[in-house]
Image (tube, rainbow, N blue to C red; front, side, top):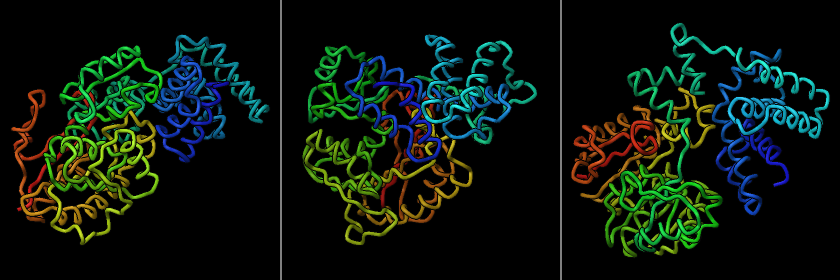
Length: 447
């Protein structure tokens, strides 16, 4: 990696133009430079993810020192300023002078010599006047203050406050800025969990047990997943414990037919297939060749055989599967409010109008999903969001409009999970409140 800052600049411009999702863009760069020094890769990751994570705060500060609002600058200059401000405010190990000088060099290298003085002036002013930065008054402008402090759009702060109490809202917002460890699911058919942990520790990885699921572990202090022997050999997959919980609660068992409608990258489908111990079949579907390729990559790496993939639009009814599936997993496209701490660009692109349109899409898919389940079979509905309209309201809509009953989740939940709604057939994990991503899980049985 010749210049980690230049790599970060390219990713930030792509994400800003909505040409690529941040986690995909960052992952592509890390894969390309997988054999570069760990120090450079770590710097690139911290700078890119941190700049995206703190973008609203950064723009608020930058606007106090720039005659042109940050949002009004040219895309490349905007990205350079954001990178520079992030280093000055949040990266103590980087001298302010280096943040300024490197930004100026990149401006000139990319053909913006005439604006290099502007970049230099803004960044040096911020560096010299850090103590004079003004933030919103939490008493006079509470929503504005929370928006800037936690780098979340103000409308979203207001949405959370309408939905949750003040304490819960702040716990959710704070969680988005916390460092996230990587959660892995150890596949029971591929090896012993303790052996996997020992293998990872032998490679210098910090390993701890998960909080909710027996075969979950959390890792940190590693460089590149594919360098880890246990991962490379397919003994584990990347999967948050909330997603594992959804797959576990589906109850997929031996010799069953399981249909996973929106499956990529295949975590729940693989979890189910693993629990089925090589019997039955999991049909793992998604909308595009690209998404199905992600599932197939995981299948190939793990070597699990009782699973097959199909490119299929879940909005289209497949009459050949009506009444055939023992379990249907409907983990549907959603606003992603539960995983914003992992995918920072979600909060800049989502809108209330967009969330409302997603409810319509979810119901369009659910109208088909309910028909695939055989009598007595299970429909597992889940999302990675914390918006009641996409979650509880959809769950109740199924009960009101189709021949389904809610399944009491209490007998199946670990002791660490205690929620009143479990008796009603659903649970809602909240980031910052529970030890996992924000996630909704609802379980229904066809009558």
